[in-house]
Length: 117
Image (cartoon, rainbow, N blue to C red):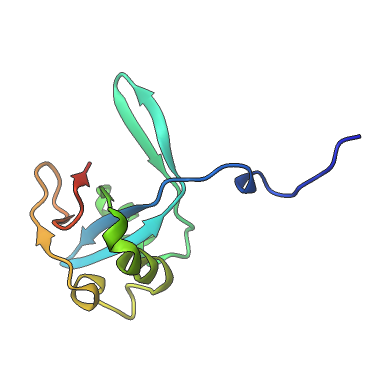
């Protein structure tokens, strides 16, 4: 007999990333676990953001974002950026994170993250 355990996201862990975005000089960070590889050739990564989120509007307008992969020392920043709205807080300032100019797109990378995509 099969047993229903609820939604499928309970079955597997997801990596946590910090997505930075910018539009009209409004920079923001959102912590996401809904991220995955779409294709390797050409390289494509997917992210999923609820339309009601502040970052969704920024990314929809700018068509750009950076995936920043944090290390274990950034747990507090990951939690803050995933639970507070950029409408109410400057997350870079509140968490003491450093903006670094994006190499390809016009939004900032998070300097403290060891990997930026």
